[in-house]
Amino acid sequence: MIGIELPTLNTNDSSYTLVEWLVPDGSSIEGEDPLAVVETSKASEEIESTGPGILHVLVGGGQECRPGQTIAYLFESAQERDSYRASAAAPAAASAPPGAELSITNAARELADRHGVSEDELRGLGRTVIRTADVEALVRRAASTPAPAERHLSKRQRTVGAVVTESMRTVPAAAAYAKVDVGQAEELARQLSERTGSFVSLPVLLIKAVARRHAAHPLMFAALTDDGAVRESERAHVGVTMDAGRGLYTPVVHDAAELSGDRIADLLTGFRSKAFRGTFQTAELSGATIMVAPHTTEGMVLATPIVFPGQTCVISVGAVDDQVLLDAQGTPRTHRFVHLGLVYDHRVVNGRDAMALLKDVKEELEAPAALG
Image (cartoon, rainbow, N blue to C red; front, top):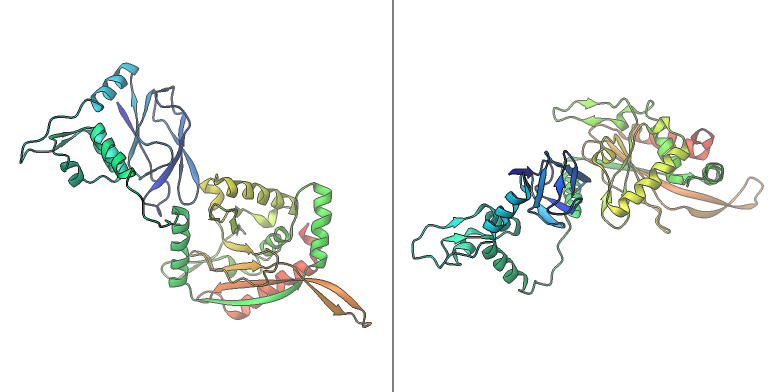
């Protein structure tokens, strides 16, 4: 019998969710096959078999599990598995005499740990030997008790809260805003969409505009180390905040300055699909050196996001706002504006640097020929 232990997938989490088993319980495994999908607060990962054998599942789909926990066994044969199951499900022993030492089978202890059943609760059964059937009875009894009327935050939301708290605690943030005429940028996005078949939007062009200014503003793509040094990034990896109803994700457009507008658009389309399904891989959420936060819901004018720990700034964009202005001849004309917000870590970035980046990005969007 070989145990399949859950590896550490995300050092920020003390527990994960086992989403589903990819092979049925009792299946014959040939080698290092994908067995299960486990969800951390950041991504979904596949857990592989450690070798061949007959699979015996210990943790069901949708249940919580922790790093290092044994989530399944691999038996050499179906007979060995059947023998184990018969032992684990054997009838409970008679009531324990006073002072008798408590013995808990391995399978029962695994089940108790999984459902948070304490040893005191097991002792309360009055038996000398605790088997899985005893633990199952306690779990059923607890499940039949009406739950209090309260809503628990999801693991993902608790992780988001921890990041926000850390940012508020450690980053002395300042902010600046710029008003940008995006009429030409929207026209370029429309033309690119028609020519390429990709959904090129204003956030796509913003990502490209920000990445193109990497060399001119290296501090905006830097990270402050624990010893107070500033580590500059060689590449522009632009993270994008995204919430499709399953929690906040921050997928990364790697090497964004090297990509065309339609390629960035295709990446964002794929990211939105993964955000909706919750199927990101860790690599897709790692490595951002700057963040873009679209807040383009109609009527949203300004947004002040947090600076993510490990980065020095984040740029937000609001929804487009139509305004009628008089041209040089006094004729009223409609202009399309957005507000860009830049929030920055004042330990690394000064106001002059922040204004310079905003000015450059504004110029890119108002004369966007290079963003295609």
